[in-house]
Image 1 (cartoon, helix red, strand yellow):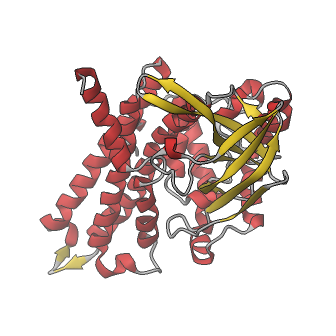
Image 2 (cartoon, helix red, strand yellow; image 1 turned 90 degrees about the horizontal axis):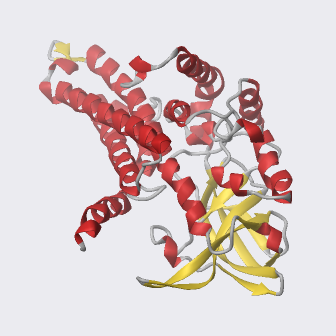
Length: 389
């Protein structure tokens, strides 16, 4: 049981039961195969997609008035926590379309938003570039205006998704603005369809974390876009990106807690059943204290996520709040995974057991959606800036 499960109402408990049953039937059975093959067979992915629609989990994060499930932030935190117990390669087929698409207007709603809600289309969030990872303002992709149109050039990498997308939300510089901190790139979000002349998308590097979860490389060479392909307003792209990254980091924290819970369960069972020197290894302080630290770290993670959800619903969630969630939970699950391997000893690294897979998967959490170093920078900045430093 999760640390905050004791205070759930009947509706939330039913949601958890649905998610856990779905994962038991549709996701867990494929874990070993996907990790071994390094990809999710198309028929398996489409089956997950189909079944998730049948039980109401597909696009559950978007409002009901656009066809989504309309779940609250608290409900989504429970879902993301459960999804974290398995591979991103599998649960990403249960689409949670980016909330950025709610900024669609006019024909964009029928062309992009609604097809993502129904599953007819899949999108990519394309911000990261070869020379602009943590330094998002260092992006080189740019679009120049030609009469009413825009001409886009540049590239993106480490853009992730479960399958080949239908379009990408691409962030590019469209000019410069003067600010009190000096010149700053004006960044705009564009909706770019796969198949548009000059737009090439291909599968990128393969990661040892979440094997089967794809990364894509995007290249733009004089891609001509109409004014109706700007998402939101020109020059307000980073504000849009921030909306997605803010709660996205909280969901990463929630998923890390789910993964940690699963790992702790494995470590505890092994510590109770594995015997050395005539007794279960859990009775040795070297092992028992690890379990104690695991449990304490998970409890703190769950409480941080729950607090962030309350703050978000109250409209007072700050960047530092989010960074604390992302930082603690991602580093916590890495400690838990590493200690679990140590408790298992050599068996923890054997392919026959899932421990090594969860250990590899956990490592990515400290990097994507903002590295641990970036999160510490955001937190320390929130402390020092009010003091003029």
